[in-house]
Amino acid sequence: MPQRLSTLTLAAAFLLCSGTALASSCDQSEADVADTSIMHYRESKCADKVMNQAEATFKEGVELEKRGEMSRMCGNFNSALMQLDRYRRGDWREKYSRVAKQVDEDFADRLARFEKTICPQKIQLYRHLANKGDARAMFRLGSSYLKGAGVPQNDTEALNWLQQAANRDYPDAYMALGMMYSDGMAFAPDYRIAFTWFSKSAGLNNAEAQFQLGGLYRKGMGVEKSPQQAVEWYRKAAEQGHQGAKARLKEMYRAKEAKEPLFGY
Image (cartoon, rainbow, N blue to C red):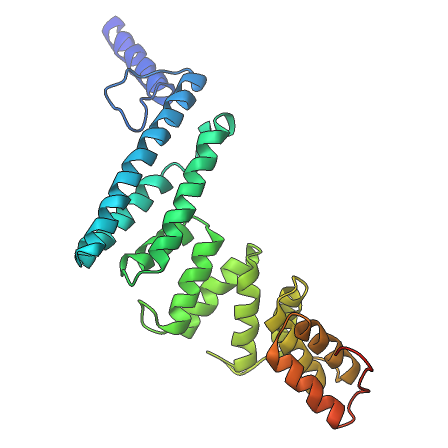
């Protein structure tokens, strides 16, 4: 009985320690610690180290690109981004905000560069980030399916990911969804839903969304017909330099659908 009690005590102690004492994520040789502040400090140092590693990996990728070794370049770019992504979350970030901010900026800069390539790993990265709740990645993945860029064209998948991005208040997704519902991709056109998404985007001063709203009001599609509202939205878009809106305003003035102002649009 005493021997069994001793075994149970040791097991309980081991479980307790394993639940609180941890090594840093980049140096497993460090002794485990249970102190949260020490762990957070270690993770911030790990993030610093990984930023340097990612920079070196990315620079090597740029050199590979110059030599025409595109496959290896893509691998390097993707590897650098995955390294950085590991440190875009974590309890340590609140206390070490300077390091956290730098990780995020480095990731954004390298992602922007990666997106300009034709690397197939882009889709893998978008999917990885989208599955973690990243709205921008959801939008990029949805757009890829919409255009058939890097994946087979699939309107249903596009709608799914764009909807998820919009639900997380990603502005570009509003416009994309408005166009999908207006054009009737993957389903019959639903102008009422298109009107809703265009309205959200137009409210953020998107000129194309304002132009599309003008068209819906002019034709009475998804909303009660209103030449006055059509002109109003066309004007907003025209003031931002939208050429289509300028042309539609001229049409409406010539057709006497609206009174032409003495000045401006």
